Image 1 (cartoon, one colour):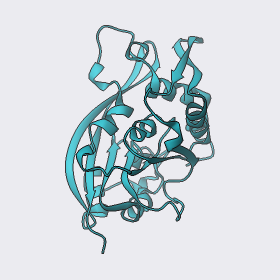
Image 2 (cartoon, helix red, strand yellow):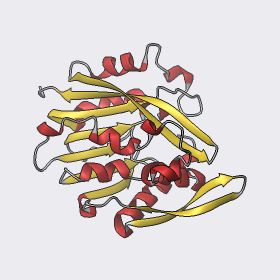
Image 3 (tube, helix red, strand yellow):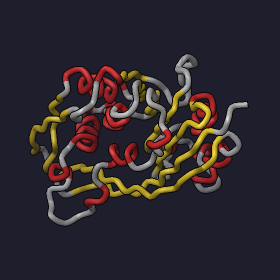
Length: 249
């Protein structure tokens, strides 16, 4: 990503802390609106994986973990979770949540007015099961090992070369392990050069890279809502694909 990565700004850290940890009424302070889009970082974990087949001491990887909510949700049922994000600001916020359990942030109302809210680590999570590190999804460390679960929410269309990330996935997921990819399929030149945009649908791009080593088990439509201020929101529908790793070799 570019040096002026917007995900390093305090504004985006605050927005994502609200997106990940805010109460429903804090995110959407109106009695009307798309409430089914709330809780996205929780739903991408709870509603996608087949938890009946996850081993007892599962190991999970959360790539593009942002400020960490999905990593904590994975830790409810996994013995070890590694959360990786390219933004140092996001990783720092996630680590503060892990260590301290709480983090104050600003919720914008309008213009320069706002209020201070407190993000709280979800109850019932053992923080020692989680570690957060800064990393590049297109150049992941070779010593990460393999995982029973890999989760990458809204990442693919934010990479400058998504193929490099997708080609790494077979080596990260254990045989019969599960992979969840969500994407709003929003390709923007500020993140991905046009030359690296898919010439087919985003799902077909995933198929080209994954089929043969993975089998597509499920497709889901998952709305999400990001609040910019009291009267402006990003309502988006991500496509979630759930894949199972075929036997190695």
